[in-house]
Length: 310
Image (tube, rainbow, N blue to C red):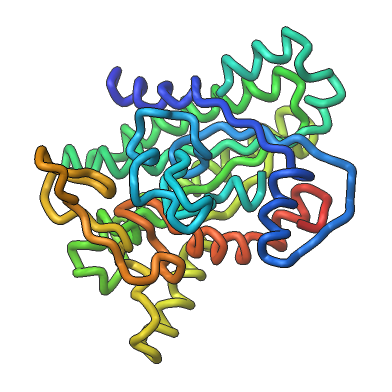
């Protein structure tokens, strides 16, 4: 249990700051979309590799072929291009910056915090322990730690906190490989649904406790699933469309990940012909196209959360 909690707490030092008016506008302009609204809202993001835009220099995300679609070279994102936070825009560092007056009280009160974590913990638990029926106790530790952390963020003065629900982990290539990438594994998707049910209850209880709607949720589960199912349907009708469950960058041997080479410098991974058309980049992370497909599913709810038209 100690090791499990450590894996969750290891997320805290990760600190990313994106400003919607600059980062999101840059992304949207690359798609030919413009918005002249100059009222910037700061988006502080806490989470795992799904939202990391390049904070760990020693990670595999700084190795070829990561970043081949955007920005054209390895830049620290776990994928071929942009990730979810690029389309939108850890706690100790956040608190320290507030104490140092890097951000004003007004900045904090009018900002949006996005908290995203959990998938890595669950998939590692399942793949390592291989006992899904022991997961209930582990899930409680994840949820309890999550609750402590989002309450702590609120105590720093943040009035709008968005909690990402868990994506369907049974659709991740590292799991769906057992079906030869034909289908998501619903037993593992059930793990996500159970987690999300508990998280929705936590959010509802905290909002009642506070007396106002501070905490909101971002439905990654249904946005992932809808995007995947739409592409699957198109794939069945047109075989030239890539199977969304199949990773673009796939390891060729056990123990090797995307970007890894052997002692002779030979690549231990294979790359699909059109990374820009894939849904998953590697065994766990969506590609730029995947994230964009997910973002389009999320867009209506994002506008409600931010009060802005993204």
